[in-house]
Amino acid sequence: MSFQRQRRTQTAEYWRDEFSMEKEDVERIYDWLVEEGEPRSTEEISQKAIEYRCQKEEMALSRQRGGQIYLPQDSYKVGQRVVFPALDYAIGEVLSIRVGNNPRYGAFEVIQVKLDGQEQPREFAAKFGPDHPLRRSVPSLEEGEGSLSPRQLNAEYGASVRERIAAALSKNDEFVCLGDHWFLQGLLPEVPPFQLNIAEAIIDERRQPVALAELYEKSSQVLDETGLTSTGKDSIRSYALAHALSQDPRFVEISSAGTSAWYLSNAVPEAVRHKPPRLVPVYMTRKGAWLNRELRDFAIEILDEADELPGTQPAALGSLESIQVVLTYPHRREGTLPLSKRALGLLAEKPPADRFMVTFIDQSSNEDMQGWMIPDQGYAWGLGEWYRRHELPIGSIIEVRRGDAPFTFLVTCEDRKRKSDWIREAKVVGGRLMFGMQRKAYTCRYDKHVLIDEGNVGELDSLWVDSSAPSADAAPSALRQAGANSVEDLFEYLTRLFPELAKLSGQGLVHAKALYSALNLTRRCGTVPVFAELTRRACFDPVGDGNWVYDESLRHVTYSTEEEMSRRPSSHRQDLIVDRVYPYGIANSEGKSS
Image (tube, rainbow, N blue to C red):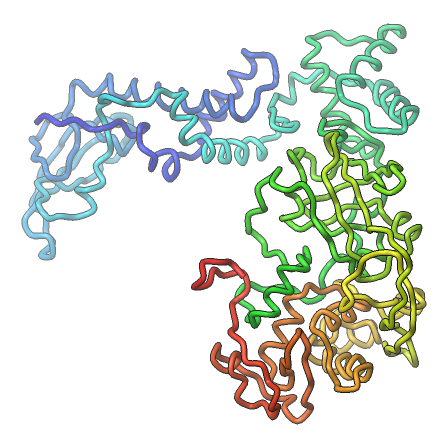
């Protein structure tokens, strides 16, 4: 029988679905690293793994000449040698043939085969006529025109191979990994504690991160002078030093000016090492939450990083020259700047480190300010003093512009003559958040709906609720222990907050953005959870220009369908604004993702 098919290793299914790291693969990688004598990247290791699998298949194919390739639809004879590609090209001899017995598939045969190297014979279908997955899943064999080399296979399918290699090697204590490069624990030269002490002294003296190459060079010079120099290649000794630094709690790897460098852990600000609890949402944004058109536009305008859904792709890096940020109370209080995925478009490139140093430049004074960016956590740190110096209130509009040098960013709040205005003022009275109006002037641009004077921050701190507090449905003992700082149901809290803000308007109006801003005085929350409650609760009604009113008599009525949330049939308002609603984070009929 003549046929021509691809080899299994030439198919996407093999590398994406069938390939898994076996003991033999790990042993081959181990031997290869011993031969190389230097760390190798996951990319290089995947290249060798693919080469090995292709070579293994070639060897198996070279052994097949004495046997017939197994195909379920073919017939066989007792004593015939058969090759099974799906079993890593195992070869066996047909011992017997019997008639198959399955009315569903009609007549066929069953051959009993003893595979070389195995004690127990196995049975396989033969003369199998029906169209069945068993027939359609014949493994590929012959290499034809246009076949891919191992290097091309690595370029095409290497991503999934590298992922499985990294997972397998990370579970093996004989391998160590630094960055993306792997080596063998047993081949690492010893790093004396004295060398780590030298590295600590160098960083402490410089008072800034130091690149590994410089740390290695200077610490090796000192070791040479003391006669403690170890033998081996510089590349391996440098790798060993980096590995030792990564295992020592005194040091942390960060990125400075886009280059990997080492810093002292105790020199990294606490708000950079750990996300401030004040920035962690209490109420989570959920995909598919319904928002009316106007509220959806507000959410897109504000770009609260707490509204970003896991797994969504960031904006293309390097796509923006500047962004505008509306400052909320949690970021104002922590001296941080929100970093939405769109804001990350300011970065011409994103360093591999999960946190890295940047320079903020005050555009009005040209003063440099050291800062940090923690993109995966959605914030930058280092502007607290700048906020205080410019007396920036909640609701300030800050422009961040990409600087001329890498990892430099110009910040401005657009200084101008003080403009007096009536604004909301937060107060704590009897352990409750309340609001009044006062006249105050600022020299910056601001969103008047988000603008709030926070008053006494110490009093506000007494009302703050973070994500570690028990939720409203927690055990009673936990709630009693937490006292006033337990996490209250969002709707319940909004119905207490809304009347406080409504009293500031002669018509009982509350702007949606003002409600969001006021909520963030005592608990962290994105715009979407707040706006979703406005959309689905019948007691809230839109009356135009972003304003909403509250009807206590409808407190227990909830709209459950898209039509109800849009038309709001339970409303008693004559000035009701009917608006279309959209599921947040899901592409709509207009082709946009809300």
